Length: 339
Image 1: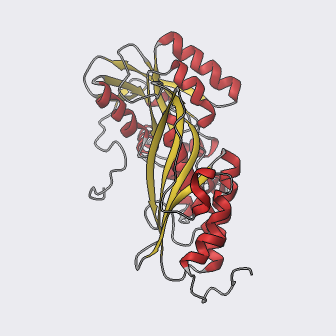
Image 2: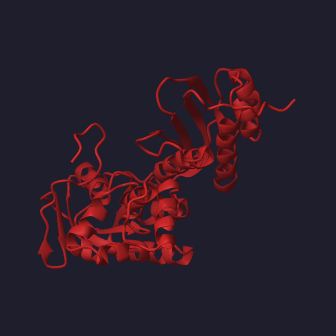
Image 3: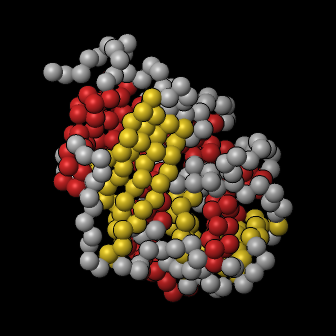
Protein backbone atom coordinates (compact mmCIF):
# COMPACT_ATOMS: atom_id res chain seq x y z
CA UNK A 1 0.00 0.00 0.00
CA UNK A 2 1.35 3.42 -0.89
CA UNK A 3 1.73 6.08 1.76
CA UNK A 4 -1.18 8.51 2.06
CA UNK A 5 -0.90 11.78 0.16
CA UNK A 6 -3.08 13.83 2.50
CA UNK A 7 -0.70 16.21 4.35
CA UNK A 8 -3.05 16.11 7.36
CA UNK A 9 -2.58 12.37 7.86
CA UNK A 10 -0.10 11.76 10.71
CA UNK A 11 3.11 10.05 9.66
CA UNK A 12 3.96 6.89 11.54
CA UNK A 13 7.74 6.88 12.00
CA UNK A 14 8.05 3.15 11.35
CA UNK A 15 6.13 3.55 8.10
CA UNK A 16 8.36 6.50 7.18
CA UNK A 17 11.51 4.44 7.73
CA UNK A 18 10.11 1.49 5.82
CA UNK A 19 8.64 3.40 2.88
CA UNK A 20 10.72 6.56 2.76
CA UNK A 21 14.20 5.58 3.92
CA UNK A 22 14.67 1.84 3.50
CA UNK A 23 14.80 2.12 -0.32
CA UNK A 24 17.72 4.53 0.10
CA UNK A 25 19.67 1.84 1.97
CA UNK A 26 19.01 -0.92 -0.56
CA UNK A 27 22.60 -0.84 -1.85
CA UNK A 28 24.13 -0.85 1.64
CA UNK A 29 24.23 -4.35 3.16
CA UNK A 30 26.10 -2.71 6.06
CA UNK A 31 22.78 -1.09 7.05
CA UNK A 32 20.82 -4.38 7.42
CA UNK A 33 17.80 -2.88 5.69
CA UNK A 34 17.49 -0.32 8.51
CA UNK A 35 16.06 -3.07 10.73
CA UNK A 36 18.71 -2.79 13.46
CA UNK A 37 19.94 -0.08 15.83
CA UNK A 38 23.31 0.31 14.10
CA UNK A 39 25.26 -0.39 10.95
CA UNK A 40 28.48 -2.39 10.70
CA UNK A 41 31.07 -0.76 8.43
CA UNK A 42 33.89 -3.20 7.61
CA UNK A 43 37.42 -1.85 7.53
CA UNK A 44 39.29 -1.47 4.26
CA UNK A 45 42.93 -2.50 4.58
CA UNK A 46 45.17 0.32 3.44
CA UNK A 47 42.49 3.02 3.82
CA UNK A 48 41.39 5.50 6.47
CA UNK A 49 37.70 6.08 7.16
CA UNK A 50 37.08 9.85 7.01
CA UNK A 51 34.09 11.07 9.02
CA UNK A 52 32.48 14.51 8.92
CA UNK A 53 29.21 15.97 10.18
CA UNK A 54 27.20 19.07 9.28
CA UNK A 55 23.68 20.14 10.21
CA UNK A 56 21.31 22.59 8.54
CA UNK A 57 18.43 24.51 10.12
CA UNK A 58 15.51 26.26 8.44
CA UNK A 59 15.93 30.02 8.60
CA UNK A 60 19.68 29.70 9.14
CA UNK A 61 21.09 27.51 6.34
CA UNK A 62 18.10 27.49 4.01
CA UNK A 63 14.91 29.47 3.67
CA UNK A 64 11.59 28.52 5.18
CA UNK A 65 9.53 27.28 2.25
CA UNK A 66 12.46 25.99 0.19
CA UNK A 67 11.43 22.75 -1.60
CA UNK A 68 12.09 19.72 0.64
CA UNK A 69 13.95 17.92 -2.15
CA UNK A 70 16.30 20.88 -2.52
CA UNK A 71 16.88 21.01 1.25
CA UNK A 72 17.79 17.32 1.26
CA UNK A 73 20.25 17.78 -1.57
CA UNK A 74 21.86 20.78 0.10
CA UNK A 75 22.22 18.73 3.30
CA UNK A 76 24.18 16.05 1.48
CA UNK A 77 26.25 18.52 -0.51
CA UNK A 78 27.49 20.62 2.40
CA UNK A 79 28.81 17.39 3.91
CA UNK A 80 30.25 16.22 0.59
CA UNK A 81 32.11 19.53 0.41
CA UNK A 82 33.92 18.69 3.65
CA UNK A 83 34.96 15.31 2.26
CA UNK A 84 36.12 16.93 -0.98
CA UNK A 85 38.44 19.26 0.91
CA UNK A 86 39.97 16.26 2.71
CA UNK A 87 40.66 14.45 -0.56
CA UNK A 88 38.19 11.71 0.42
CA UNK A 89 35.98 9.55 -1.79
CA UNK A 90 32.42 9.52 -0.38
CA UNK A 91 30.77 6.24 0.54
CA UNK A 92 27.65 6.69 2.66
CA UNK A 93 25.96 8.61 5.45
CA UNK A 94 23.83 8.55 8.58
CA UNK A 95 20.82 10.86 8.58
CA UNK A 96 18.99 12.60 11.44
CA UNK A 97 15.91 14.74 10.78
CA UNK A 98 13.71 16.68 13.21
CA UNK A 99 10.38 17.23 11.45
CA UNK A 100 8.23 20.24 12.41
CA UNK A 101 4.44 20.17 12.39
CA UNK A 102 3.03 20.21 8.89
CA UNK A 103 5.71 18.00 7.33
CA UNK A 104 3.53 15.10 6.31
CA UNK A 105 3.92 12.37 3.72
CA UNK A 106 4.16 14.65 0.64
CA UNK A 107 6.97 16.74 2.14
CA UNK A 108 8.85 13.73 3.45
CA UNK A 109 8.50 11.88 0.16
CA UNK A 110 9.93 14.91 -1.62
CA UNK A 111 12.80 15.04 0.90
CA UNK A 112 13.55 11.35 0.28
CA UNK A 113 13.43 11.95 -3.48
CA UNK A 114 16.08 14.65 -3.10
CA UNK A 115 18.28 12.27 -1.13
CA UNK A 116 17.81 9.59 -3.78
CA UNK A 117 18.77 11.99 -6.59
CA UNK A 118 22.06 12.95 -4.98
CA UNK A 119 22.81 9.43 -3.80
CA UNK A 120 22.74 8.45 -7.46
CA UNK A 121 24.82 11.44 -8.56
CA UNK A 122 27.55 11.10 -5.94
CA UNK A 123 27.61 7.35 -5.32
CA UNK A 124 26.23 7.48 -1.78
CA UNK A 125 24.40 4.94 0.37
CA UNK A 126 22.25 5.45 3.47
CA UNK A 127 23.57 3.52 6.49
CA UNK A 128 21.03 4.57 9.14
CA UNK A 129 20.13 7.41 11.47
CA UNK A 130 17.18 8.80 13.38
CA UNK A 131 13.98 10.73 12.76
CA UNK A 132 12.04 12.72 15.38
CA UNK A 133 9.42 15.44 15.70
CA UNK A 134 10.16 18.98 16.86
CA UNK A 135 8.17 22.10 17.76
CA UNK A 136 10.96 24.14 16.21
CA UNK A 137 12.14 24.61 12.62
CA UNK A 138 13.07 21.79 10.26
CA UNK A 139 16.53 20.59 11.31
CA UNK A 140 18.56 17.91 9.58
CA UNK A 141 22.03 16.51 10.09
CA UNK A 142 24.24 14.08 8.24
CA UNK A 143 27.28 12.14 9.37
CA UNK A 144 29.15 11.49 6.12
CA UNK A 145 31.69 8.71 5.62
CA UNK A 146 34.41 8.56 3.00
CA UNK A 147 37.75 6.89 2.40
CA UNK A 148 41.30 7.94 1.64
CA UNK A 149 44.42 5.86 1.23
CA UNK A 150 45.95 5.44 4.70
CA UNK A 151 47.60 8.62 5.97
CA UNK A 152 46.61 10.64 2.91
CA UNK A 153 43.79 12.84 4.23
CA UNK A 154 44.55 16.48 3.38
CA UNK A 155 44.62 18.35 6.68
CA UNK A 156 44.47 22.06 7.45
CA UNK A 157 47.83 21.97 9.18
CA UNK A 158 50.27 21.32 6.30
CA UNK A 159 50.72 24.79 4.81
CA UNK A 160 54.31 26.11 4.72
CA UNK A 161 55.84 29.49 3.82
CA UNK A 162 56.27 29.81 0.08
CA UNK A 163 53.17 27.75 -0.73
CA UNK A 164 50.62 29.19 -3.12
CA UNK A 165 47.05 29.77 -1.94
CA UNK A 166 44.42 28.55 -4.40
CA UNK A 167 40.63 28.33 -4.51
CA UNK A 168 38.24 26.38 -6.73
CA UNK A 169 35.28 27.77 -8.64
CA UNK A 170 34.02 31.30 -8.00
CA UNK A 171 33.57 33.15 -4.73
CA UNK A 172 30.63 35.15 -3.39
CA UNK A 173 27.85 33.41 -5.33
CA UNK A 174 26.40 31.75 -2.24
CA UNK A 175 26.19 35.01 -0.30
CA UNK A 176 24.66 36.87 -3.23
CA UNK A 177 22.43 33.88 -3.89
CA UNK A 178 20.93 34.10 -0.40
CA UNK A 179 20.00 37.73 -1.08
CA UNK A 180 18.56 36.76 -4.46
CA UNK A 181 16.57 33.90 -2.93
CA UNK A 182 15.11 36.37 -0.42
CA UNK A 183 13.98 38.60 -3.28
CA UNK A 184 16.52 41.40 -2.81
CA UNK A 185 17.11 43.71 -5.75
CA UNK A 186 20.75 43.17 -6.69
CA UNK A 187 20.53 45.24 -9.85
CA UNK A 188 20.97 42.14 -12.00
CA UNK A 189 18.86 40.69 -14.77
CA UNK A 190 16.37 37.97 -13.72
CA UNK A 191 18.48 35.18 -15.21
CA UNK A 192 21.54 36.17 -13.18
CA UNK A 193 19.49 36.50 -9.99
CA UNK A 194 17.93 33.06 -10.53
CA UNK A 195 21.37 31.54 -11.20
CA UNK A 196 22.71 32.99 -7.95
CA UNK A 197 19.72 31.73 -5.95
CA UNK A 198 20.33 28.26 -7.33
CA UNK A 199 24.00 28.44 -6.31
CA UNK A 200 22.87 29.20 -2.74
CA UNK A 201 20.28 26.44 -2.63
CA UNK A 202 22.35 23.78 -4.38
CA UNK A 203 26.11 23.83 -3.68
CA UNK A 204 28.53 22.09 -6.06
CA UNK A 205 30.93 19.98 -3.96
CA UNK A 206 34.34 19.65 -5.60
CA UNK A 207 34.97 15.95 -5.04
CA UNK A 208 36.23 15.61 -8.61
CA UNK A 209 39.48 17.21 -7.42
CA UNK A 210 40.01 14.84 -4.46
CA UNK A 211 42.73 12.67 -6.00
CA UNK A 212 44.71 15.68 -7.22
CA UNK A 213 44.40 17.35 -3.81
CA UNK A 214 45.81 14.27 -2.10
CA UNK A 215 48.73 14.22 -4.53
CA UNK A 216 49.58 17.93 -4.61
CA UNK A 217 48.01 20.01 -1.82
CA UNK A 218 49.79 20.69 1.47
CA UNK A 219 46.59 21.83 3.26
CA UNK A 220 42.93 22.37 2.41
CA UNK A 221 39.57 23.43 3.83
CA UNK A 222 36.09 23.84 2.42
CA UNK A 223 34.76 27.38 2.02
CA UNK A 224 31.53 27.47 4.01
CA UNK A 225 31.85 30.41 6.40
CA UNK A 226 33.69 32.73 3.98
CA UNK A 227 36.89 32.49 1.96
CA UNK A 228 38.98 34.65 4.29
CA UNK A 229 37.66 32.92 7.42
CA UNK A 230 38.29 29.43 6.07
CA UNK A 231 41.72 30.34 4.69
CA UNK A 232 42.50 31.75 8.14
CA UNK A 233 41.62 28.34 9.61
CA UNK A 234 44.41 26.85 7.49
CA UNK A 235 46.83 29.56 8.64
CA UNK A 236 45.92 29.00 12.28
CA UNK A 237 46.25 25.21 12.10
CA UNK A 238 49.55 25.48 10.21
CA UNK A 239 50.98 28.27 12.38
CA UNK A 240 51.71 30.45 9.34
CA UNK A 241 50.47 33.70 7.83
CA UNK A 242 48.67 34.37 4.57
CA UNK A 243 48.75 37.16 2.00
CA UNK A 244 45.52 37.27 -0.04
CA UNK A 245 44.98 39.50 -3.07
CA UNK A 246 41.30 40.12 -3.81
CA UNK A 247 42.20 41.51 -7.21
CA UNK A 248 42.70 37.85 -8.15
CA UNK A 249 39.39 36.73 -6.60
CA UNK A 250 37.56 34.46 -9.09
CA UNK A 251 34.09 35.88 -9.80
CA UNK A 252 31.14 34.57 -11.75
CA UNK A 253 29.62 36.82 -14.40
CA UNK A 254 26.76 37.59 -12.01
CA UNK A 255 29.08 38.50 -9.13
CA UNK A 256 31.25 40.61 -11.43
CA UNK A 257 28.17 42.48 -12.65
CA UNK A 258 27.07 43.08 -9.05
CA UNK A 259 30.51 44.45 -8.13
CA UNK A 260 30.51 46.76 -11.15
CA UNK A 261 27.29 48.38 -9.91
CA UNK A 262 28.64 49.11 -6.43
CA UNK A 263 30.23 52.43 -5.43
CA UNK A 264 33.36 50.76 -4.01
CA UNK A 265 34.42 47.72 -6.03
CA UNK A 266 37.18 46.84 -3.57
CA UNK A 267 34.83 46.72 -0.59
CA UNK A 268 32.41 44.74 -2.73
CA UNK A 269 35.07 42.11 -3.39
CA UNK A 270 35.78 42.00 0.33
CA UNK A 271 32.07 41.39 1.01
CA UNK A 272 32.10 38.47 -1.45
CA UNK A 273 35.23 37.01 0.17
CA UNK A 274 33.65 37.06 3.64
CA UNK A 275 30.04 36.14 2.80
CA UNK A 276 30.10 32.33 3.02
CA UNK A 277 27.95 29.54 1.56
CA UNK A 278 30.24 28.96 -1.44
CA UNK A 279 31.29 25.37 -0.62
CA UNK A 280 34.43 25.66 -2.71
CA UNK A 281 37.86 24.33 -1.67
CA UNK A 282 40.68 26.62 -0.55
CA UNK A 283 44.06 24.93 -0.48
CA UNK A 284 47.81 25.48 -0.38
CA UNK A 285 50.56 23.85 -2.42
CA UNK A 286 54.27 24.29 -3.05
CA UNK A 287 55.01 26.14 -6.33
CA UNK A 288 55.61 23.07 -8.50
CA UNK A 289 52.73 21.18 -6.90
CA UNK A 290 50.46 24.21 -7.37
CA UNK A 291 51.19 24.18 -11.10
CA UNK A 292 50.39 20.47 -11.30
CA UNK A 293 47.22 20.94 -9.27
CA UNK A 294 46.04 23.75 -11.55
CA UNK A 295 46.76 21.59 -14.60
CA UNK A 296 44.75 18.74 -13.10
CA UNK A 297 41.84 21.09 -12.35
CA UNK A 298 41.93 22.44 -15.90
CA UNK A 299 41.80 18.90 -17.28
CA UNK A 300 38.73 18.27 -15.10
CA UNK A 301 37.03 21.46 -16.28
CA UNK A 302 37.20 23.00 -12.81
CA UNK A 303 38.48 26.57 -12.37
CA UNK A 304 41.31 26.82 -9.81
CA UNK A 305 42.72 30.27 -9.13
CA UNK A 306 45.93 31.38 -7.42
CA UNK A 307 44.85 34.12 -4.97
CA UNK A 308 47.84 34.54 -2.67
CA UNK A 309 50.70 32.98 -0.82
CA UNK A 310 51.68 31.53 2.53
CA UNK A 311 54.05 33.68 4.58
CA UNK A 312 55.96 32.82 7.78
CA UNK A 313 53.79 34.80 10.21
CA UNK A 314 51.67 37.90 10.67
CA UNK A 315 48.17 36.47 10.45
CA UNK A 316 46.04 36.99 7.35
CA UNK A 317 46.80 40.12 5.36
CA UNK A 318 44.32 41.11 2.68
CA UNK A 319 44.85 43.53 -0.18
CA UNK A 320 43.21 44.31 -3.48
CA UNK A 321 46.05 45.11 -5.84
CA UNK A 322 48.07 47.84 -4.11
CA UNK A 323 45.28 48.72 -1.64
CA UNK A 324 45.70 47.15 1.79
CA UNK A 325 42.38 46.37 3.46
CA UNK A 326 41.37 46.55 7.09
CA UNK A 327 39.37 43.37 7.61
CA UNK A 328 37.27 43.36 10.77
CA UNK A 329 34.89 40.56 9.75
CA UNK A 330 36.40 37.52 8.04
CA UNK A 331 33.23 35.46 7.63
CA UNK A 332 30.13 34.00 9.24
CA UNK A 333 30.45 32.95 12.87
CA UNK A 334 27.78 30.80 14.50
CA UNK A 335 26.58 32.37 17.73
CA UNK A 336 28.23 35.73 17.02
CA UNK A 337 26.29 38.97 17.31
CA UNK A 338 24.94 40.19 13.98
CA UNK A 339 27.03 42.82 12.20
